Length: 70
Image (cartoon, rainbow, N blue to C red; front, side, top):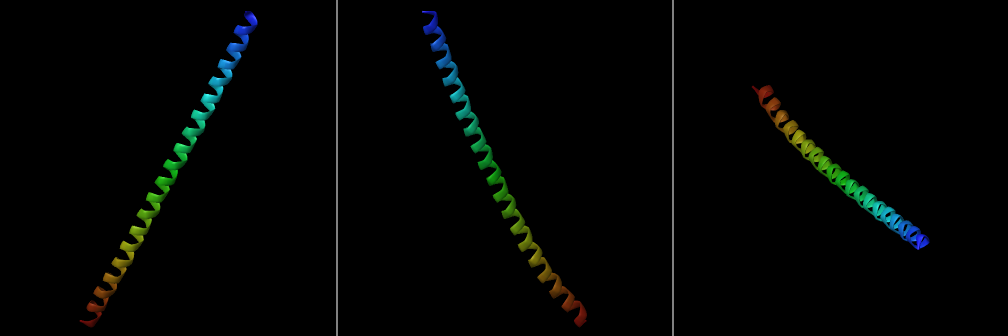
């Protein structure tokens, strides 16, 4: 009977360890996805900033031409 309890306890521990490992791996995947999402948002913001900067440069060139022609 004691041997059966020991084996049952070992199986329970092994099962618990497997479940913990699966949960840990799922958590890691979730963090990677979040990191990728943050990175994609950052890239999008940088592109928008670059586009805004280019438009601003064009406007400044037009103002400079107007000021030179006066």
